[in-house]
Length: 344
Image 1 (cartoon, rainbow, N blue to C red):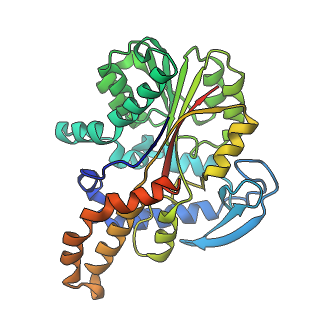
Image 2: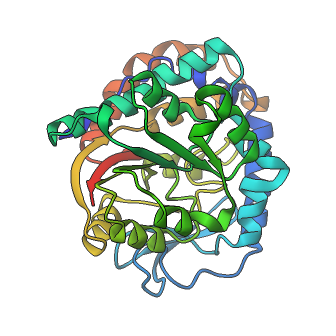
Image 3: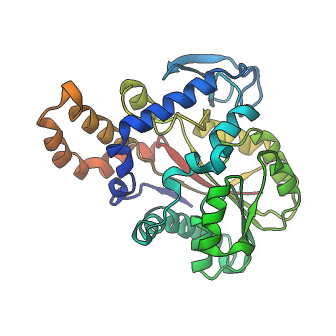
């Protein structure tokens, strides 16, 4: 099952903070980059484990390397315990949670409708095509954040589900959405132990694999768990958004920044599928690359000495073509994220 594209209607409202607080968010990204550059050099590709060699470039003062073996995009430094503690755990995860945690009912409903229910529906459609009843399966989500996806499972009548999360702030919010029985708080180094104890049939990792320090060990543990039948991954990819971020240095980067110290490509995803004996059951490619371009140009035209009436004209003209342009990238599997359901 292959799908391409998704409407961007409603995205501007969800990402409004990116427009209104660009300067502060950019400052945060630069501070994270400084912390990342202080870590030891990365010697092996995060994806295929070969000695890291390939094309190099620098963005926001951080060096990156495109692995010559599997085309995975690697940050040149390690995501050490120190770095991960600073990004995900410090202040209870409050800084990282940011826009992922909502308390306003209308904003919560908007995020569920636009982001998370479509992910659940895609997963359920794929499971049905594989002759499974989604409501009867057991689910675990590693890196469950504020519990949004878990909430959509509950809405759909799924009874057996649990989320695992390291950020205390997000764990507390998730409990208010789905109940304490469905949430587990754990430490950064507990992922392998968690997987070893899983009894679920579907393991969900939405925007998580790129944040984990040991993705290869995680994938190997998943392969060895006889209970897990499916792995549902969403990962950020090395897409045109990266080039836009390199071109607009005064715009907050969204894809290659912070905890995203490495990015996947279609080839690097094929690599891990072959190595860890995963079979693609379904895939959905869509991104926000063109929306990122819209945001970058719009903020640039309305900021400081560059402020011009073109800003308002840009805001009127460009939104109507975002989805059409993005679909071209999606169909080439060049979008900024990939949704893939693997059988294990």
